[in-house]
Every structure is written in C-alpha cells, then in structure tokens.
Image (cartoon, rainbow, N blue to C red; front, side):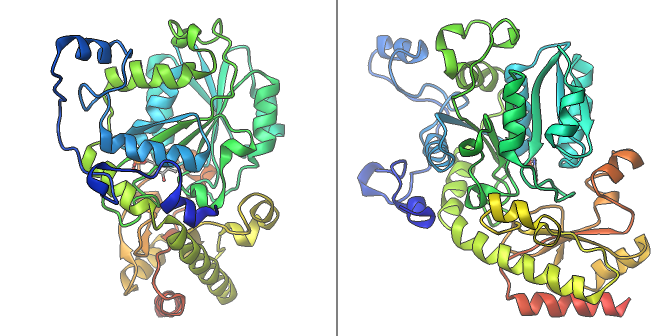
Length: 405
Ligand SMILES: *Cc1c(COP(=O)(O)O)cnc(C)c1O
C-alpha cells in the first residue's frame, strides 16, 4: 500500500460504529459504565475503555492511531496545539539541571519555550546547524536530548535525520524531531532513527487552517537509562514504552494539554487529503521559488534551491511548502505584502491558501536580533506558505507585487 492508499485504507482506518466512514465526533466529557467495578478497572488501566476526555476520547484515539500508523510508531498522543505537543514531549523526560541541544533556526514559539524552560532549570544550548559536527562539542554529562526540525521554519535548513540520530545514540541521547513542515508525505523520521516525532497538526495535517492541534509519536526503540531520566521514575517496568506511558498517564493527564474531539475529527478529515495537498503544495513552492530566484536579487530560500542533496536523499526530492525571500528593506517587504492579491497576510503555515508574513515583526517579535539572524529572519525577510492555487497565478501575483515596489 502506498502513501495515499494508506491514508484511506490503512489498518488504523476504522471500522467505526454503524459503518460510518469517518470517526464519529464523541463530544462527551465522561463515559458511563453499568458497574462501578468496570470504571475502576478502566481507571487502573486494567481494561481498555474511556473514563474522561482529558485522558482519552474515541475521536482523539482515531486520529492518534492513524498518525501513529503513518509515522510507524508504537503509539501517539494528540495534544491541544503543536506547542502543547512540544512542551509535553520535553516535560516527559526533562528535570531541573538537564540540558537540551537544539538548532537555533527553530520555530519562534519553540525558541520562546526553551527560554521559559530556563525558569524550570532546564538549559538549552543552540547550534547554528543541527549537524553531528556542531552538536558533539556541546554535549555535556547533563545533556538529555537533541531537538530539531526536519525542515526548520523559517530558516529552511534540512536536518540529516540519520546522521543526527546516530550521533545522539552514540552518546545515549534520544533525538526528538518536529516534523511539522515535512509531514509524513516527505519523510518518516522514525524510520531514519529519530526517537520521537512531533507535529503541529494545525498546519499541513488539518490542512485548511481549521483546528489548532498537535501530536507526539513514540518510536519505542530508545532504551531509556532510568538513572539518567528521573522524570521517568515509576515507569521503569514499561521498558521501551516508558516515554509513551509517562506522557499519556502523567504529563497529558496532569498538565492537561488534551486535544478536543472536534479538532481531532477535523485533523482526520484533513489527513485523508494530505498526500494530494502536499504533492501540489511542494510543486507550487518549488515553481514559485524558481521564478522568484530568476527575478534576481531576492535571496530566495527554498530547500530545492540550497539543500538539493538532502532533499533527494531524504525528502523524496521535495522541499516542502515554505519559502522565504528578502525584499531589500522592511519598507519594501511591507509594500510587497500589501500589494499581493491572492496571498493572505496571516500568521499560519500549511493552509490550502497561500499565506505571507513578515516574521521579524510577528513570530520573532520576542526574539533578540541575534536569535532572529540565527533563524534566518532579517528585517526584510518575507515568509511564504504556499497553497494549492494554480502556480502560474501565484507566480504572476508575486512578480507583479515585487515589480510594483
Ligand atoms: C506552528 C508550529 C509549531 C506550534 O504549533 P501550534 O499548533 O501553533 O501550537 C511548532 N513547530 C512548528 C515547526 C510549527 O510550524
């Protein structure tokens, strides 16, 4: 079964009650039982069942199972947002005094989160590029994980997943990877050695910009050294499932970042067309990047222009749906944004509509100039999240807006 067929006919797809083709939206907080003893067993995780929708919900499970199958994991946990997914994944394994090594070109919200984690005594060391050569010198006895993005947003650097995973494992460290911008259509990071995959499913998975949501998938292969991960205390008996079990039964339950059933449903509906949309979006993005590059002087960034080898080897020859270019000054960038007809000025990616933003004054508002530069965000940078419109219309629109200034 290939990718698109799997989205509709995979093992995790149904069956659902009454022959429904989609999972019913179980919009219920609680689940009633005929005997108290059964509910007691459900609470003790001795019987499969639902008790309360913060802990588990059938619609949310339907989404988790589909994404877990796509990524090839041992289990997935859905979250109320991509940020909830990133924070819950980190809180599952980190304790005060621990260190993380991360790429400096990460999503702005994740960089802010690492700043917040400093207040909990968790320190992050940033590398300009997530490569074994840059990571290795920063590893200390306190390092507990490596964190990166497959295609960083908005720096658009492609991480060599297999190389970073190999280095991480040689130091007994797990590699956590945010694959939001790549999606399973481009790459399945667990198959290349990553240990935990995180998505903001608000983006390409839901697809139409209709549900803030996230998901974490555990590859189940990392051998946790419980002496080094006191956060996993109490889960030693679960062995390689310790991450998933602590995430589901401690972190999700107690921090409470659960996904709403309706948003899980919207994610499932979106997921079914992920392949079709990504095929179109990636082709559009590569075509627009090439056309803008040919205009000259715009410093266009798209993985198909600057990371061809890794795109070929790891991303099916594709470069994802985001590109950036530099307008020459902030004023010109703003004038271009305002002159576009089809692209909406909006803070999101992964929509079917083309969206544009000036990252320096929005997503990276809280970052220092050094943090911005490290993330590839300059005063004149425009980020484009390319949609499914006709490529020729997009090229015409951007060309006209750029020429007009
Ligand atoms: C958007 C995004 C997030 C955060 O996701 P939300 O659903 O907005 O909370 C995390 N990582 C990446 C790469 C993103 O693009």
